[in-house]
Length: 162
Image (cartoon, rainbow, N blue to C red):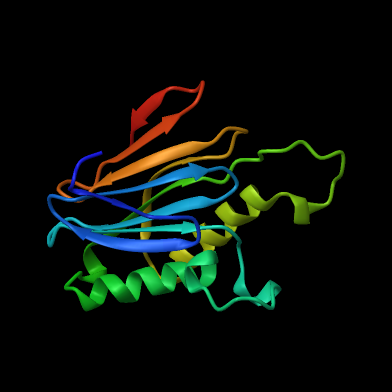
């Protein structure tokens, strides 16, 4: 990685303007949510771990949850000059990393994260233009703030740009 790459940790979010890259590692059941303003060349990336801040008491970290993390990412981007009408989203992750012998939906964190992410983006009227979600494998993603392309790298399932 070069000096133009900004790392985003788990339960974290960050922003970049062209020509910088945003990256996050180890998306398993977590979801990487990218927002991109193609006119102003402003990119944002959130690495959320859980679907809802309302289901847990220790919810101070807004970036940890789909409902509050996406809202926080959007507000941060607007503060540095992004225009909500220009924003598009790309999402990756939401895997089922472990096989449970149960029909308990609470254990399907990856699927619940993807559903919550899509619901929040729809509520905010931000269109998802591409996604790479589900499966049972981890992902690393890199968002390019110059063109909004999202590079997805997996172990055993190849690499692609969405």
